[in-house]
Every structure is written in C-alpha cells, then in structure tokens.
Length: 271
Length: 271
Image 1 (tube, rainbow over the protein chains, first blue to last red):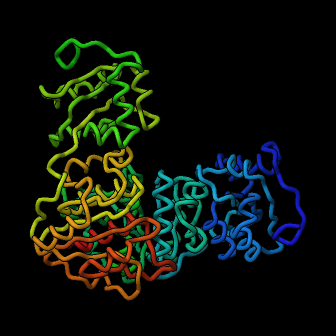
Image 2: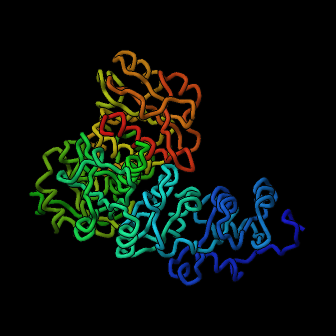
Image 3: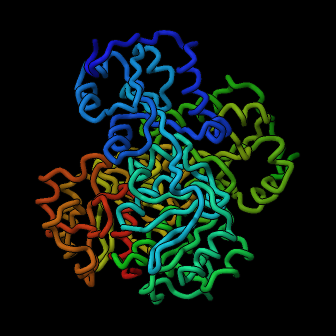
C-alpha cells in the first residue's frame, strides 16, 4: 500500500512504455497533437491543475516525493479517474525537463472547451498571439492575462501552448485563463464581428494611435505579432485600429511579452 | 590582408590562449570580476557596443562572417584601440553560447562610470533590483528601462549583469542605460537622501498604496525584489512608501520583469 490507498508497482526502468510515452509527449509536438495530451512537471503546476479540475489523466511521483509532503498533498487532491504511478528517483531525474526535479509529473488532456471559437464574450477582453515564437514570452503573457483578468488568450500560428516550457512559465495560469490552442485569423475576425468586439493591432509605428488615448470601454481584441517582425501588414490592416506604446526613452520597441503586458494593463482598465 | 586593413593570423586551435580566456570570461563570474572584462556575442550586440562607444577591447570574427556583411560593417565601426582577431568557423561554433552563432564576438571592459554611486539625478527615475536572480528578467528590465527613458538600473545583491544571458537579453540596451553593477543598500539610501529622491518598495500587499494613485512627479527609486520571495521586510520598511499593482484578475502577482515594466511605465509618466 502507498499513501494513495492502493498497491502499485514502482517503475524502475526507463524502457517502461508509460515512461517512454511521457518522454515523447514532452519532446514532440506531433505526439501531443496525436494523443491530445501534454505534460506537467513540478508541485505547483500539478497541484494547480488538480485544484482547477483540469483534465489530468495520470500522475507520476517519485518514491522520495511520495514519501514527503508532496505525497500527502497529492493524496488530498487526487480523485478516482486519475491514475497515480510511482517511479524511482532515478527515472524522475531522467524524465525531468528542468534539471532540478521536484519528483512530480502529470499527463493532462487538451482542453476541448477552447478548441474552436464558438463565441467571444460581448464586451470581453482578449489577446491574440500571431506568429509569436518564444515559449517564455507565451507563458509570461498567459500568466499576466490571468493577473489582469483577461477573458482569453488566442494562439494563431504561434508556438505550441502545450510545449513544456510554455506550460511551465504560465505558473499554473494555463488552468485559469481560457487559452485557445490554435485558431485561424478568419475565425477570430468573424467571432469579433459577431460579438461587436473591436480589433486592435499592436504595432511599432509613430503614426498609429497612442495606446494611452485609446478607449477600451466596450472591450476588444489586441493582436500581438512575432518577436522579430511584429504583425504582417495584412493582419494589422485588417484590424479596426493600429495602436502603439509611445515612450520617452532611447528605443521604441519592447520585448513582445512586455508589450503585451502593458497593452493588457491598459485594456483591462487596471492601468 | 583582411577587410580590416591589416594582416593577421587566423586562429584555428581551441587551445589558443585568447580563445581559452574568452571561454573563461563567458563561463565564470569570478574571471569577469578579476579581469573586469565581459563578453558579447552576435551582430546586434557587438555593433551596438561599438556604436555607443562602449569600452570594447577585442573583437573575434569568424572567417565566414568576416567575408560577408558583418565584416564590412565591422570594418566601418572599428577603431584603432580595438584588436580584431579572425577565428576559424569551427572555433566560432565552439565559443558560441547561443547554439546558432552569427560568428562575431567581443570582449568589453566593465563601465567604470557606474561602479559606485556618486550621485543620482535630482528628479531622476531609477529602479533597484534587490536579490533578483533570473538573467532573462534582469535583461528584460534593462531593455524596458531603455525604452521608458529611465535614468538608471541598480543591481543590489542580484545576478551578475555581465552574465552573457543578461547581456544578450538586454538587446544592446546595456550600452545606453546607466547600469550600476553592484551597489550596497546603504549607498542607495544615502544617494536617495542626498538627491531628495523618494524610495518606493514594490510589494504584493493589498494594504500598500495603489501604484496608479502614486505621484511620481519628483521622480523616485522603485525597489523590485526576488522572483520567489519579493523584497525582505527590512528593505520594504526602509523605503518611504510601499506600492502595489492592483489588478482585477485571478492572481495577484506578476513575473518580476513584468511587474518592473508596469512600475516603470507608471513611474516615467509613459503610463
């Protein structure tokens, strides 16, 4: 018997099929797409996923972690539909993506609710990431959206939201903010029209409207572009308005996540 | 003869003392401190350093890069006091920290101007990073400070500003913003008093003053704390005022760089 109330074998081989499958999910976007599963690592992420009722399918915990407070906490949060697998500490180190593992991992299903845009909220506040590539930026934007009270983050031709680096840098916010994994531009624009939401292109361009003077009273959707190239013209021209962050310093562009954060700060009326 | 107007040997051995020294500077904070030198990698960083008259001492360029537009650009920007060393492409790949090198590197002296705080500007706008550890955060804060027009960034018990990851993520802003490498708390507080600058502790605390309602008309110094722990009580209590970012979302804390960015946005009157 173990702290989770049932007897179970301890996995000690890296050739175990469950371990091999976990590592594939961690490394390969294609594997994630095919199985519609992604992985979590670390106490905070796994426990946040369980607390927020994310569709967790399986939890891996090392012998050491199972014997300490992580095991106790897991026993509290776990429920019947979730399989708990105990692994040796050595396997824990092998499958870890962080170099300094806390010994707890999970597999979680894609959130079906946010597969396609059915409808955006009238008066809602959204951010679209268009061709954004850096996982750290994507994660930071999701975390900031959670803090600012945004209604959703939409990925459009961007990095994979279920990349372990994105998931980790959301710090659990992935389970609280509606995140659309992969939407088309067409769908975003038609959903915007249906819900009377204005679309705003974030650009670095002196002639664009000043973010500070833009009214977001009836909500809106802000488009953020690629780290190096920004938004392509065909996207920014398709939006209702181009907006820009006017600043008094030596350079006129910010890191994409920082720009998104300041845009959300003003959009949500926090700013 | 090479594009830089003088004949030079091409270094092909990783045991060459200049190559070995460069690698040590990249890897070791102690080596950097002892020699008071740090390293740059990439076209943008090296060319920004030269344009901004940073104290560049030596440039390494691979044979391939020397033969393309990087070589031309370097020949334009270089001056007499800087030694140019041509290395084989293989050595370029060896000394690269980025995995995908552009074949141009430099060694640069610490900026003596910002070793000790002599004086802070009256009415100036500064940010102190106290026990901040993540190089990506530190670099992003310096880049944002450059865009917002801050008067300086002060490192206090934080990561090494000359760590190659910090340097890289500043995107060249390190050469435009005054960055104090390592100051003591005592010196910051006495410099603040001397220049009549108010000190503000950035905290996550409902009872602290709302950032939006704080007047920064006469400038000020904002203290940002460690990623996990924030500012220790003895630091936040020593400041004139505690300020907090009030938000309407699900969580009340932001990534440290994002929090610093929003604080600077409001402090500089850009917000």
